[in-house]
Length: 371
Image 1: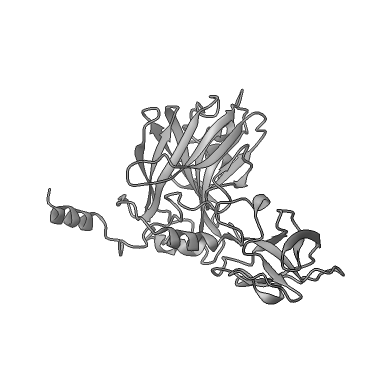
Image 2: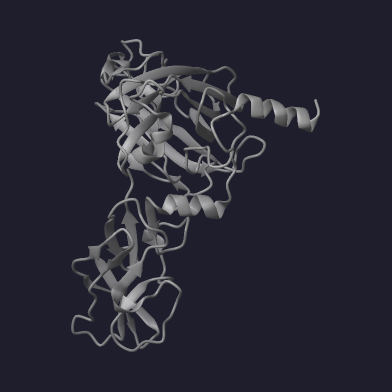
C-alpha cells in the first residue's frame, strides 16, 4: 500500500477535527516522572510517573506493589509504567480493589457533547505487557454526572507487548461540567473483590460499585513477582484508534507541571535534593541560581490548574523548614518557615534568618494541584 493510500484511509476513518491535539491523555508515553523513577510499596495517589495514580480501596491487607518508570517499551516508545507485585494478595476479599487511574479535567471533555443527543463515543488505546495472562477490567467514570461504563481486555500472551483498543459509547444522559475539576476518571483494575464485579456495565449506568471491575480474574494481584506494564495510552473522540500522538518531552513536561511542579531537579526525590534552584530572601549573599527569586516569591513554571497546596523543604528534604546560607558557603537547616500565600501563578513564603547570622534563607517548593 502506498503512503498516499495510507493517509487517505486514515483521513476517511477519522473525521473529528485536526489530527494534532487529539490525545486527551497527558504523558501517555510515560516520559515524565517528576516525583522520581521508582517507589517501593506504593500508596494511593501519585507515586512516580506524572498524571498516573494508584488507587487502593477496601481492606487491602496483603497486596504490596512496587512502581517504576521502566525503559522496557514497545517499538516507537522509550518508557512504560511498570508495576510489580512485591507481596501478593492471599485472598481477595469482597470489597478489595486496586487500580491504575488517569483523571481528565472536565473542561477538556466538552467535545464529547455528553448529556445531549449528539453525545460522541470515545476510544482508549494502549500498549500493555504482563507476566500474567487473563482478563482485566477498565472503566470510565463520569464524576460530574456520577455515571459509569465498564469494559474488559485480555492479556493473551505473557511477557509480550500487545496493543489494546476499547471504544466507550457516548452518553446522552450525563454531561461534564465546564470547569477545571475532575470530569472523567479512567481506571484499569488490577484487583477487585466479588462485590466489585457483580453487575454487567458495558453500557452507561448510574454509578454502582458493583460494576467497577466486571470481568476481572485477579490473577495478577495473587501472583508473587507478577508484572504489569503500560504505555502509549491515547484517549480520543470517535470510535477509531488513530496512531499515537507523540509529543516532545518539553511539551509533556509543561502539561504535567499544570498539576505538579517543584524546584529541585526533575527525577530526583526531595529528600535527596541539594540546594540547587532554591528560592530565597534576606541578607546579602553570593549564591544565585535560575530558581532564586528575592523576597521568597516563586513564580510557577506554568500556571497551575488550581491554587496548589504548597510544601516547603530545606536542602536536606525536611518539610516546613528552610535552609540558611552562611557566609555564602555553608548550608544549614533552620526552623519552620511560616505561612505561604499562593495563587495559580505564584507562591510567596515569608523567610527570615530568625536571629541567626546567616546571610539568607532559602527553601525548595513542591506545588501540587493534582485532580
